[in-house]
Length: 511
Image 1 (cartoon, one colour):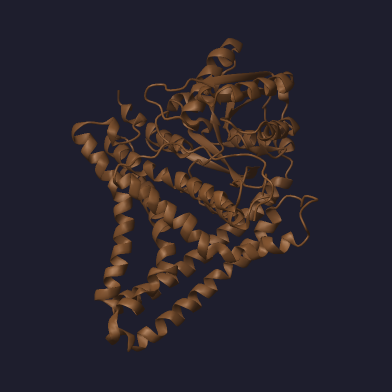
Image 2: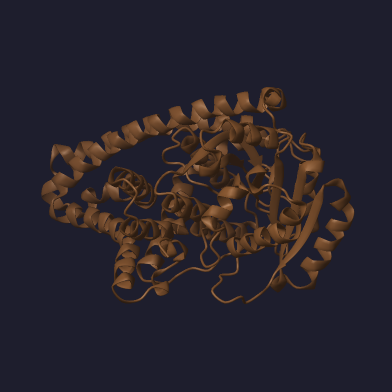
């Protein structure tokens, strides 16, 4: 089969020369990151003057990049506010959309029933006609009787509200699968096709599939906004649709550290929405059922299924696949544990799982070798975008906040007597202080994104929501660079990760 390579997860799925090539590609991201870190240490010792000049140039680059990304953030914030206030149903009046169905996949494990009910309530409160909706609650057999009981109770309460409501139990220990969201929703999509879509004669090209997380809560006009972008897309079956994930469900109840990490993730997605050439699917996303079938559904044997579905489609259609940014929010849970330290542990694990998306780099590089139809320029651009993204994630914060000072400690007495040595920390401090003024914009936008303050939260909480951004130098290293480096190192040595299910529940405020 010409596209057999599309379902590869790791080098273990191959043999012979192909396996060696894929393993080489798996080593590259970690090699680049660790090579940069090692180079910074070695040159600080052997050539401190050159390293000091590099650091100053790099600081200027960081300042320009920060201003560039901040401009994208502000533009997308304005676009998001406009889209929230727009009447998307009115925008659709000039289109025929009565044939469009909304299929919502909700994968669950052992989450609290309250979490599931909140997500379903938001769907029921949305303005889209419920007689053209299919809800699939995709439970895991391995979650045991608890999940089955919760799912049946939810179905009994809400099934009558929708045209179709299906509970699907994903069998445990299926050969060739990694337990997780990807294998669950791939199984659920096939079951809903067999049990509902085909028997009802619903055309596959008329169905929009929203692959949500179980804690995804939509805003009232999400489905109208999604449908508008689907009907106005140049080739609606060759694109995915990406909303902006905002972690507002429990934002007032989680510690400041978790809030900063979660909101930073939102800001990154907002910036990417203004750079659609770099945008891939993430977390909750949507596509047509026809596109999903053409691609071959989500992969069942890997972790980062939300982004892999994009790269699988990109290769399957020879580069003729993209992501349409909706610039419209959905709300999810910020990460929380039972106490402050468990929250730190959970946040780190979640960030490491997200940065495990680096597994898509060797997948895409190997796919570029196998796919002879995709233009070379498109391959190179996509590869460089992804390489730069994963490299900068792990190295830039360390170069800025830690490694940039090494020439002063490793450069020796001769370097420390130079004027350059005297000016290095001052120049660096000044440039970083200017760059950090962007936190003011972040604080303003983050407070504007907040939901209404719950009665139990004090008015002074708003002040802490602003001051929390002083934690950025800490979070960008310990919950950005280090888990990213952790993931790349595991991939480099073939220590492949499994799927870690983020705990979701309604916790009291901690910290």
